[in-house]
Amino acid sequence: MMNFWGFSIAEARVIDYDKNDKSLAEMLAEEMPTTRLCIGCGGCSATCTAGNLTEFNIRKLQMLLKRGETKDLRDQLHKCMLCGKCLLVCPRGVDTRKMILFLFRQLSEQDHNS
Amino acid sequence: MKLEGKQQIWNDYQKEIANDQYYYARSCIRQTFFPGSEWAYLDILGNKLGKTVFDDPKHTTCTGIGYHSDVVPVETIMTVVARHFALMTEAGFENMTPSCITSFGIYTEILHTWEQHPEMEEKTREFLWKATGREFRKPRNLAHTSDVIYKFRNEIAAQKKYSLKDIHTGRPLQVVDHIGCHYAKMFPAKGIGGAEFPAVLSGMVTAWGGESIDYPERRHCCGFGFRNYLVLANRGFSVANSKKKFESMQPYEPDFIITNCPGCAMFLDKWQYTISEMEGITYGHNGYGIPVLTYEEMAALVLGYDPWEIGLQMHQVSVEPLLDKMGIPYVPEAKYKNAKGEDMGHPAYPTYLKVY
Image 1: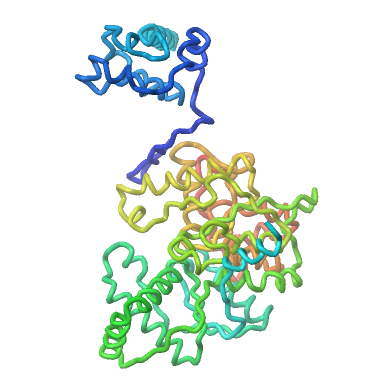
Image 2: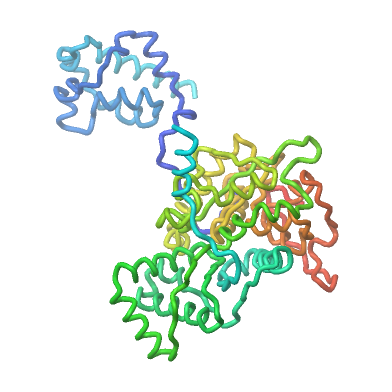
């Protein structure tokens, strides 16, 4: 492609539900049905040690996952220290640590295969 | 809701459009990019509909581009507009009909400002008198030229030689209508259908046999916004707006796009080339683009004008597929010939966007 205009097309800052790949969220829901119980209360984020030190936010991870924004998810996931405090406070009994490990494994496999 | 009630509500979305005796204000950029449009408008109004339109050679730019780019101060643009009104008054007309959406927005905004702040009108009158020795009366009626064509859409339909239908299948053509932001988004009451239910162009489309596509990004700006495209660093955002619209309309397979704004017509036409060169994407059928017409060009085609006479060869996206669908005859060899039959030269072929 040629570009002699001195500018390129800005990427739209929209979340396109029709185009985003939500297969990871579907896979997670199948593997760990408790993740469907999340009510987005944010208890996990409030108690998160990593979240106190960084921008890491488990509730946001859930949101990114459901929206199919895998790239942002990938950038955040490694910040988790796997301490497990989040799963102690979750009122719905979601095994958040297992969820993180599952997502980490799936994304690593995707990276390995690509 | 009773039908009468709905009709009553729809009445609130109408506007008054003068019936005759128009003072015509040309557009700066339309004459450059779509030179046949304004000629076609004047010819249709004068010779097909029998209306009086005064095309004043003394008229100038409204300086809207400079105003919206923070180059021209508001007092200056008000005085320039006051001079336009003075020319109209001197010519004995009361109905102002600008060809440009920006000018329409400027006139509307200034008249509204003068209504709210009479002292600014007085000051402008003083400036105009000191600068030119002229006085003016405000227009009795202000309508964009697309409003005028909309008003006479049924009269044009009665004279039409071609319909907005695919002659091979009888299918009504699927048309994307794109209305300039400054037409009704700033002052919704001044546009037919307001900002929510744009009807000025879709009304023409349905009157002439086509169907309007109500696609998700129908009301989205084309990205022409002056500050966006004048500054090179911002042009990426500008073209992104058009791209968003193209992506939204493409699944509906539009036969063509119609606009009533000079900038929108230019951008939606020429950005298709830019996007194709930058990303290799085309939005029409088989690698062609989606043709973009002004409402005057659409009216002229329906009335049987020669496509090259109204300047359709100036478009980036080839209009031939549309002409073939409508059954409009054209001479391919005459596309790049001037009125004397001399060859004007051919534009270079794009890399990805197919052209005739």
